[in-house]
Image 1: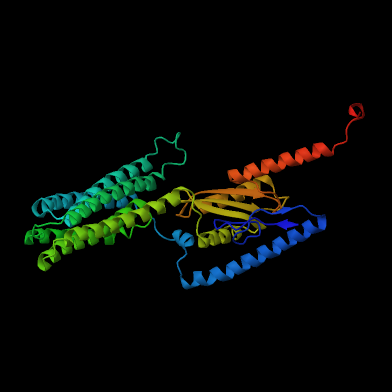
Image 2 (image 1 turned 180 degrees about the vertical axis):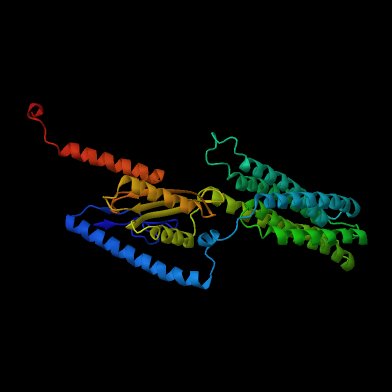
Length: 403
């Protein structure tokens, strides 16, 4: 009989279609022969269908993430560093302005905006240090594949600091609302409004620039920060101004709570996104399709694609491809083909490392140890013990031990 594992969105199994796992055959020779025939028919149908699906996309110019990455020019590291440095300098300028504004106005909404700018400085320092560690290749013996995962790790640390800080702002705002206030609403002077307006414009221009640098998670995090600052500065100014003109003392504290909830939501989402990437999130179905198509069309010697598995290890993908070659393929030819395919896959910008395994038969047991939950392991051990006990009870008693 032919058995297939459960669906796995991060891999294509032996029949070359989404969600198939390893194939095992435990029937007669005719059953095995029929299974292999069905395998090749299914693989041929899939690759032909995949070719039909992908070719119009290539002709129409529709963007395909992995394939398009080979044609796009990679952003210069100097440009990435310039974006980080410019963001850091602007954040220093904004912190000075907002500290002075808080001292002059005692506005909670402006205080929340000031804390956001202080956190921007901290984020710039964390991201700058993470980039330095990532680019440091002197410690290649202890880190043979580099330190690319330092960037998302630094973003997670910064996200935790941001969430904690704005939880404190929310608590302070709730305390002011519960205590009430006899003081008049906060009044922002014209010069303060002009400085905040300049900071909004500068941050908006930085966001437009940084969002175009898409191949650096650090710069993308800074772009999100700049957009948050634009929203923060606009509303942190509107709440006290509206409270002054409408004579609503509580509007400033309520605005600080709303802004804090917005920032906490944004950074929790960013943190979870990077955690999923660091913990081996599967690539998208479109990425898997393109990798499978590329591997199968790489050489006429390749008879079939046994498995394509792709998962994130930070910002980049780790790709595992199992290809099936004719059994009589010379070792040197098989080695060169596998190495060439590996190099071609690693040329894709979103692929950090690729591993190509060569097989001569698509019908075999699962080659990698599968993760089995502890409860299932205990159940398997109990079943094995019961089988051993039953086998020992069924064994005939030797004559010398019979009564």
